[in-house]
Image 1 (cartoon, rainbow, N blue to C red):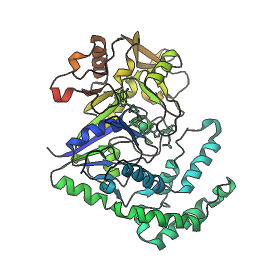
Image 2 (tube, helix red, strand yellow; image 1 turned 30 degrees about the vertical axis):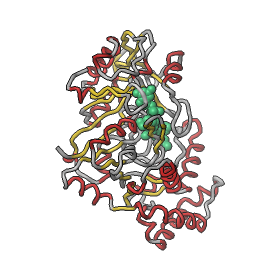
Image 3 (cartoon, rainbow, N blue to C red; image 1 turned 90 degrees about the vertical axis):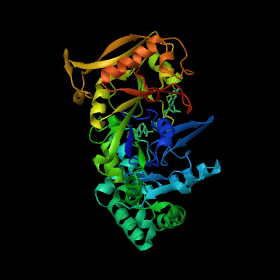
Length: 426
Ligand code: GDP
Ligand code: IMO
Ligand code: MG
């Protein structure tokens, strides 16, 4: 059956989406990013080589498939060209990477505005990646953005850039970040030559594949709890990270969607500020960080670590319509005497819903499961998992009411237990 499969993170990002897209890409005709920008850092480990992708979809190691960066993505041209050069340097054919000309450009003034915005928020800073993502989406919605299509027409490009600089000029000058329009346009002219061969009508590409009966694999960025509408606002990113974002980010209708795969770590992490009820500020949190190498792919910041959060996960499964889960990093949890999951939030002795997650006085209730000491990284069949590890994944499946299709036990492409393909259940 042909159609669209969407892969989304169901936590606060870095669930291992890239690693899973790399595996599933085999089954699709095209792989497409639908939102976010180079705030994403998707890590693949292919034949021992680690590659971090920021804007390029994680199907890049599956020649000769087209890879689309959709209209809903914001693109930093300098970063994009650098990423392409790095991939080319390791022998990858990057001519397959296509950019929808409707995508909005993240320009140097967006990066400056991101920094100034964070400074102005002071103690309430979001802890953004500093990549200019929020200001680019603001300009898009305010109709003062610059799109990749504008690169084709230098006069229109100049006019749009100058108009945006007029709009933001005072703020930039006051913050000591004035931008010289002439110099920026020169830089853009140089970048535009590099980017031109990649520009396409993304909607035509998507529908060409679908009408021929092909499959498209959509790669989400960030995580559900960072969604601008449904996440832990205002500690969120500025795009729709949920599965619905794929429709508006690529330009197809919901009826095309066949499957939604929700990726979750076996525990939970978060980078940046904002509520995180299951956070572990202790030796166990430290152990997860060390064993899981939980440091931001882009910024190097230590990721906050905590137990799996059932309340947030159930909410995320609903928001996305998740049909199957992928549980990653199960290997990281070996060696814990007991493992917890946050099964409810409580305030003043009463359970409260996920909408209250950020409120003062809301505390998490933890349900405990026995741990396991065995190294599971070489396990490839679910029946070979230690009993307690398997019981833990079964507990996650039951708690979220969503079947687990894959369990990841390492960063390498092959470190995967496929339950789907074995025809079994956890
Ligand atoms: P993404 O943003 O969702 O693609 O995830 P990131 O790449 O930012 O972070 C996931 C990190 O965990 C990367 O360093 C991966 O190489 C690594 N990883 C993914 N799956 C596993 C796993 O099952 N076990 C271990 N130990 N590492 C994993
Ligand atoms: P991937 O795709 C984890 C977080 C930032 C910050 C908030 C807003 O690799 O999972 P932004 O720069 O988007 O305005 O920052 O969102 N954030 C991520 N956290 N993984 C990501 O992407 C993220 N992208 C943004 O840390 O808290
Ligand atoms: Mg990441």
